[in-house]
Length: 62
Image 1 (cartoon, one colour):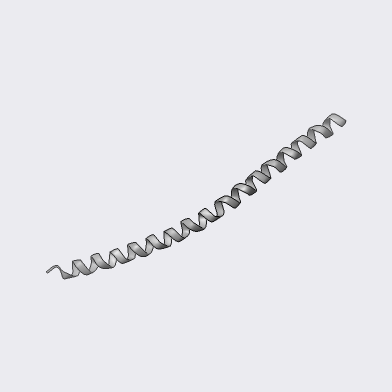
Image 2 (cartoon, rainbow, N blue to C red; image 1 turned 90 degrees about the vertical axis):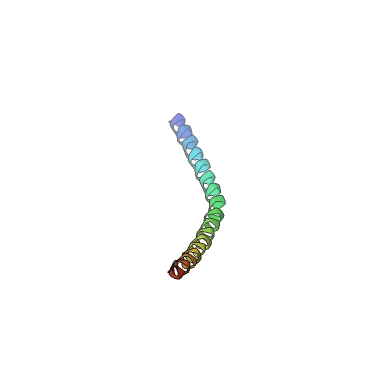
């Protein structure tokens, strides 16, 4: 019985360690996600601006 309890304790400790590792990883990834979202917004704005410029240039072609 004690051996089973010890095995269960080891498994629980391993689970807690993995959860903590995942939490730390998530905390480091979240700022990167926000940065990527901001970069996407900026790139979309640039694409829109470039599209308008191209359309204006095409409109000038006789």
